[in-house]
Image (tube, rainbow over all chains, first blue to last red; front, side, top):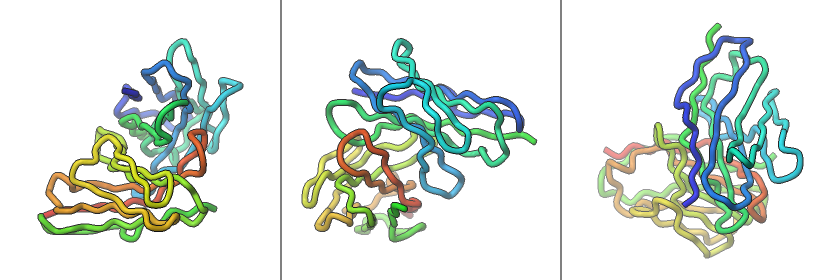
Length: 114
Length: 113
């Protein structure tokens, strides 16, 4: 079965510091990859997505992610974190075959220190 | 903008009650989904639908059923609510195939007492 792993449950960074959130998936089929953000009390908002082509993708709010097939990873990055980035971040995948529904990781909660 | 609307933000129900969670999307999307969100577990897929009157089980369908009588509406039904169904429920919709993003509602926080 497909699975998505976000190894960091909780990360704390200082405002202005760089950020990297990790995501690994485990299956061999071509994945479609997504990062979503959930602010407290809100639904999920798409940050960025990867389907094919350039493995470095840009998203909203200054986020980017890099797809590395050899490592089965799709890590999210931001060069300088703002206090408003404090939220929970979810990596998700859809396989090229099978059902259309997203499979989510368990999430990483980001705390930003002043 | 795509809008996915869930009928309630908060619900409190008693054990054994039949519970309906309603979801409506306004963008003529083919696909609709119900997820359950619990701390440390992320979002887990309960049921999904690719078309009117069709449904497919997700990863945790036990204790739930769904109904899709119209394209824009997807209902989640808890036939007999139990305390272990206390959770946040998120509805989502997407257009067409697998390479399209899903749009989410604000969620319904259900408490079963």
